[in-house]
Length: 486
Image (cartoon, rainbow, N blue to C red):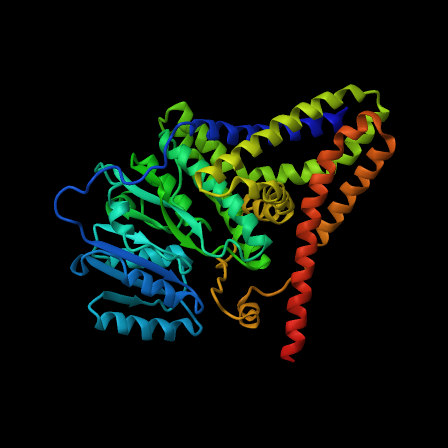
């Protein structure tokens, strides 16, 4: 009874988080994509564009030339290249920035002796000397469209709007199965979560890039701080707790690359998961003490605790096979109806969530027939890696900010050489996959009510097996590259 109670409690909590995504999707019924909310009154303001860089030799020139093509008066535009690089990126920045400076662009390269505070430290240094009233930020792999500044400025329709965020698009969406599935997962966040939270006055976060801040809001919230791995989420909540309002313009898009390498994707997901829990631990007291409407407080609680679900997912995967056996042998066979109900609510909620995201992002819904289940399985398969990051955050273990490598059109050999170093990975995922598949085989053998657990067991087994096999394949590929270098 204890094992079954823990199993159903874990499953119910996960279904509750899935149902919350359904609720966000329903909030968007009848809402059109948001674009600029008005026309900027009076004279255009001065804008500083900040480009935080760290070893981005394959994409930095594309970024600099895209920023130089921004349609905004040159006398009102300042570009800061916040370059902490230690590789060939530095030389590329010097060459291209000199060329752009000669063409009349106000571009300044700022470098630090030490990478203190990582990205937050670079942004803080740049903000101290920035001359703009507004500050736009782009990561190295983004390609802002020429009208971006004008479109986002229209979102500042009130003096209390402190930040306006645009939606990410994906340059390399069709590169591989991994990039396609990342597109599905990211569309859920940008086309549903961010849109619904913004449209209904709930707190949401600046995504670290493809957005613009009112400089006054940054200062009023305490500035950029490097004590979490998600400095963007941290500053976002501090600013909104100070009373600043945010706008999300899902009708304004900025294309960027998603990680094409599994190691980069894992590293990115671990950083986001760990940083969100660090932000939760840092800010939960101010959030609880703030006089917020209940719906705002509830959304903040769900948002900042969502990565704890990965701990629940691993626990659920461990409990599934014994729960099936105990339910069958302990006279609790009637509980199969509860499994079916939870499966319908949880799975149906996620189907509506990702289907809504695909429609609002302009994706062909037909492609989701294979992409959606695999994307959900990929998210499940990442649970061990993300749970490790969550546990490190809960234990107060600090770690370096590991940037996600982007390769653009670099050759395969160059991309692998630039990728994150190989590490032993995939063993835990493969072991858990075998455990779940063994449970599925037992359920098929027993039949009856035990067979109702098959969808859960097979789906989770697929997710962990997919990530485990891909991790092992990546490690073998990098090992072969190491031998080739020798």
